[in-house]
Length: 373
Image (tube, rainbow, N blue to C red; front, side, top):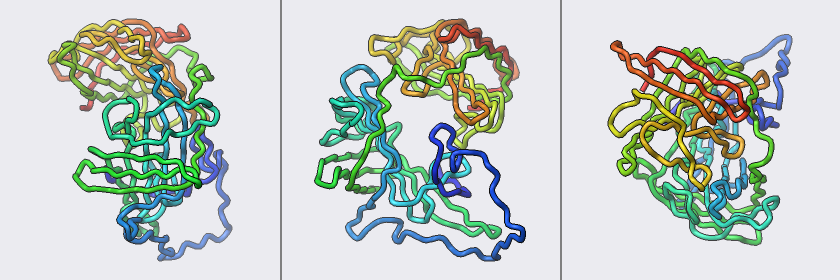
């Protein structure tokens, strides 16, 4: 994805809300504001950050956390964001490099469980790019790079051309050194380009391994009246004779740039994670599915929906997402109830949902409308 953003420097961010400087105070405005016709050009990182050795040297840890044994299978999740730049917040609400040639590298690495979760250590070894969460995996869905490719002066304001770069293969090698860690990542991008990154230094992993800690749960009934809906065919499972679709229904049209989340106070999203019969489309009646002993894996069969569950402080499966007055995201996960979907002659859909949450609250939705594919 390539997008042009205005960006604000990311300083003192409140981790719960993402507000710059941790609040919503009004900025001071000088009595006689002076705006130069041609503002001074921001710094440029030469050669798009690529050094003489052909590698992109990353020298800062933007974020690092230890999620622990989230699948209860003896393999822990380590998530690290490395950069060579000052970070800002783009108009989509996500972190972006603030200067042309700036990079962020996101690594989702799966290795041995740390002996002390409060002081977790990323294990040494080679992590291979793969669509799994097994030992030594460099997980594809949450590993990518973001590059500030260009800065452009538009109407007296510097804008930045930001590109998310996805991978098709690669390895990450982790070594422990006297400086902390040496992390070397070599990938082939989805367009066939080879990129090489290196980081050496300390990494302190924030402990997010205790799945019994407080979660941001919504403790109230929701009767949703959507104004926008989308549908995504996620995958097919011929051995289980079912497809997997995700339907998202929103009560607002102000969404994040990826179209996945409400981006305004009071915004609500109802996510329906459904498994209709293979090749039959989504029209039908669904019952709640069963999770395996692996805690998060669904026993796939036609005409079930994935029940809601928590992964860290986020929700998976079928759930409601709500943005409160402080900008915090609260969840209410579905534990029981009925769902039916029918397609009408004008290609709209009618969705009737009557769910019960983990807090024994009701989530209802009776709606007819179009679903953007």
